[in-house]
Length: 277
Image (cartoon, rainbow, N blue to C red; front, side):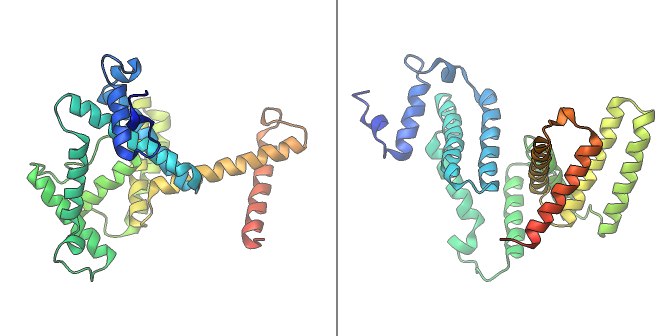
């Protein structure tokens, strides 16, 4: 390490990180685990790190966010190093590609177009530029380019947005609600009459329509569900705390008692919201 001043430099920035990654993958002196990895084995970690960034932001854990962003950056560095070893591209080319894309997609900032337009108009312009990019990649289908690796709920919304641009959409939200009722009925019927695979298909249909409802309501369904998950955790922990005061655990309780405590927690939450200190 004495002959590696860059690696030892606490202010070495991105060049330091790139050199560390190169050393980790060195076939002679690197880390055996890092050397064995490929794009497919690292991809799940990349997804996980992206979610951990989102989690830190959701919790407003700003002291953790720097580290989580670093973990996510390391994933890009890891993929770029493997690509460089194969002669595919380098990290600098990744950065240049993103810079080119941002300049091309923001002519109102880096070009001659006016900035005097709404965020909605800018979004439409952004989509038009992306459509032209897809056409240049021979992606002619309306749904081409919607990544398969996206979370299913997010991908559902993106697919529906693409279809809506060419007129394949319910014009009125009431029709979406009617479809949810229809799908729920089919699911209830499928539960007793169909195979497990068919039940799963009906359930998927209902989730897809619920995602469409979120789109019509201008709700980001992943964010909404994350918030509900957090609320459930908070309230159930409140139930556990009340049971502990009674000298009990959930296993020593029953649904009737826990349901009553759940209602108590909800009332207390509402009171705190109505009368913040």
